[in-house]
Image (cartoon, rainbow, N blue to C red; front, side, top):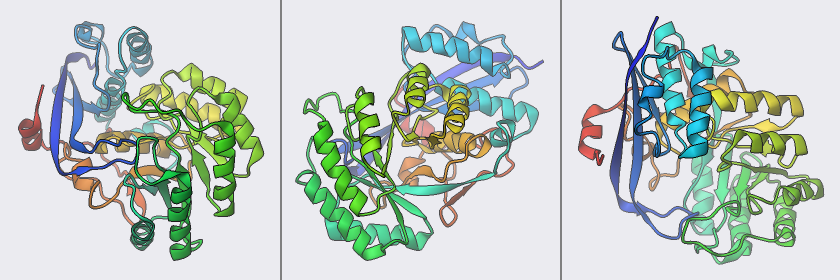
Length: 374
């Protein structure tokens, strides 16, 4: 029987020059941090995870050492208690699944159900550009083979001059690519950066924007109201033909249970690196499927998080697309995936997962040594 002998957590920082000006953050990002979790067993195998900072995990390694890494349901319960008392330590769950795959010789997508060995992607942009530049970016996504694109609207901290200018950028995209590219919109109202104290849209604001998005044939409207306003989300869903999406920062699985039962969202977007891990989020995929709610994870982390969400989506889910953070040149695959020996590369809008055991993660140890900060 395999037994866990060690858990190692390291923190890394990649300087960004030029900085990345994310639409949801008015302050340019001059570095990109990554936390790497390594779980080793008594036969020398290593499972790898990444995501949140693992705050609160230090000193609790003994809860896992000596245990069989394949007992993921047991480990999920322990991590859920750590989540309740301290911080979100779900990258540990990803590392356990990766290690379990290496023990069994199977890729995670097959262990989860094996519905598919690849996932269709949508290009998730992150930068606020003027209308012409946004149209050109959309055309480049289309040329690369992506079937869909997510457009960011202005967060309250700055960027374009309000949602009407955002709509003009969307109009320019639609004029350039027509119906050849499915469009989604992230309204950035569901959460805020710690320093951003401006209020989210009201229901009437969101309803007015929804009317414009409906006119432009948008597939879903993401985070249009404050994260706590589930009743407002349901009202908005009932008032428009556009799907209402959200939940990327929802912290507890029981909150998603309520969201699904209330049909508050048409699309739920948990991220295995931030809530529940693979073990918890597979429950959500099943619940959503039974309720007729679309399940398609948020995956704006590094390539390890993208892979973990992709394996879950391929193995369990039936999502039309998975989020692929990608907005050249500011957010390239090379920047996003700096912990990896080889950055992920999409193939005409598809991510192939293949037969590598576990998650298929191979780290760039030299780069990690050079960027280590803790």
